[in-house]
Image (cartoon, rainbow, N blue to C red; front, side):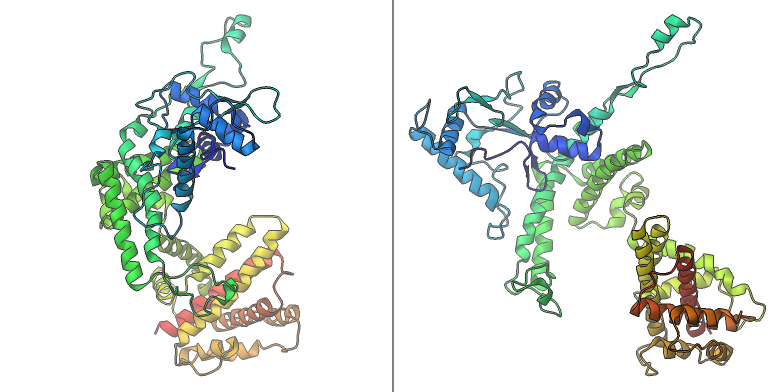
Length: 562
């Protein structure tokens, strides 16, 4: 038997309605020091009385169940005969209403529920409105959250139910709670300058207390826009109902990897996708209409959120900064849902380009930037021999190489190289495995580069050895092909022996150097694919990654540059 149809740690409709314990939990996730201040969620009233009583943070609504009705719920739960107020027609009607609310609250997220249905807390009706208090109509008072006395079965004394009246907040209000926690005076362990001055009168005056005032004015100023974001986040999810298909597209393998029931994500195409986009646009328009927010007000809120993110980042509160930045992105996406472009949206924001690049760098731009650094760092290696059979790898060539990789869908190297760098800074054994896996992946990527360079009409073989030789068919590349054969090793030799054979012949020309790297690439690729590279040391892994990247750069030079 359900007693509490809403709880203090409730989170509904994508954070549109959250209970007080959940509000504090969300704030503590952003600012972990709050966990020490409120270790038990049942102490929520201490905080809520304080912040609501001072008018610092006001709930959006309250859910209140009268004591006599709560007693009847507990009686049913305990299988008691009703005590106190008898189960009359009015109580029976209220119990039925609560049952309907419980069903409506759960059913709102079901696919069978119409897409345009409002959450029962956004559209309370059929008696549900009798359980809702609006804080502006019922202001806070000291006993507003006083627990309800309940007589339980076999209990000698009255027990108290602390969930008879539950304030409901928005998830973004957790940021306001964080701002309150970060404000106020801070001391160094309670050390006071006056105490020291009493002992040493000559001590110069100074501060022993620091702190910032809690500035919540931005939340008040942009309240309508924040409410529109909350509405859009909740109801945009409901728009997915329109994309439901009787026969979802399960891809090439027809869902065989998902088990017998073939559950899983599917691609939204055709009319369903059109319906989804239209539904999302309608939700966005309704969000702005409902709270009387225009595009200027929305983007002003986005700018404020971005600046708060930057301020918190510079203050060292990176999780708080990220939360502000995510709200900024939601505001930008809401504006885009109305038919505006990203470029137009960013131009209308204060420093929109800088804020978005800082917190949400475009994957393509970030990949190009980082690959440019890595390729540029290896380009001088091609100049270490006086005899040049290839063009000089210039900055212009670096840009062209990246363009070619992008056009061929070959940016996967970024995943491997960035992971190798990240794991390379760690000293644990898991990092050793991670580096080995990504070096093997990078070696496979080199073969993909060969495939792209040789084109779809290549018929010379499906293994890396003939593909490498196929990249050196131009007359200027014949010395590379000749040197490649000179670096041959016994096919049955171990990986270490193969490497040793190759390294016994130091290159004396660029052609031999390129051929040596290509031989090492072939050996690394085969060992990584068939046996793994886990025996290599960290420095050897780094050298292997450089060899693989240089080989890819050489393949591009020999096949794409006249």
